[in-house]
Length: 83
Image 1 (cartoon, rainbow, N blue to C red):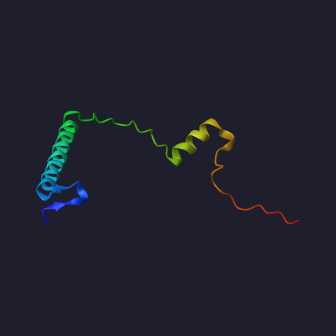
Image 2 (image 1 turned 180 degrees about the vertical axis):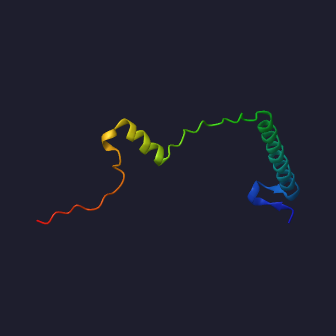
């Protein structure tokens, strides 16, 4: 079979040539994209992480700002009254 009528009456050799050109064009474009990505390397941006406050630090800060709440984080025994 020397002709393929589905693809606009191209011969097998024409189809092979078209396929080879497409493969070469794809490879050429991939190389160009890789080269462009290497030329314009992104500058790494270091994020400034917020300081993480521990629970103990938060309790100490609250104790200094609100002295009447000092020790409120501790649970006491239940003072249930009989009614």
